[in-house]
Image (cartoon, rainbow, N blue to C red; front, top):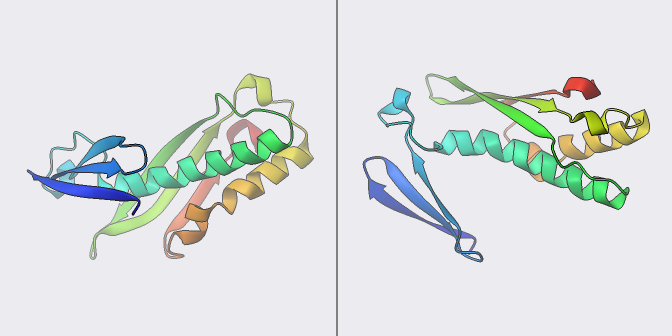
Length: 137
């Protein structure tokens, strides 16, 4: 097993990663009867795309002899009603100045690595994925 999820009442859960025992709570969003004080399940879905992209990009960068430490990604989740679901995820990369001189070939390799990460390939095709590479555009 990967994790356990326990419902705590009040539209909250505790999620525990079994291998590390690390845990976090989720909360329903304000617009869906919750308090919005924690990540919602759909927030986690959108955020998973960003974490997967930067993780596989960092693995690739390491094999190429450099480090992506300091890259920041802003995540925007777009919801749709009837049925209520995620309809889009927009990611905006903020590249540190130390990585601005990265050559075009390396940028292309890293971008393609991110765009083909396991989460990106697992998200339903009806969910639009937009990526703004910021200073790497």
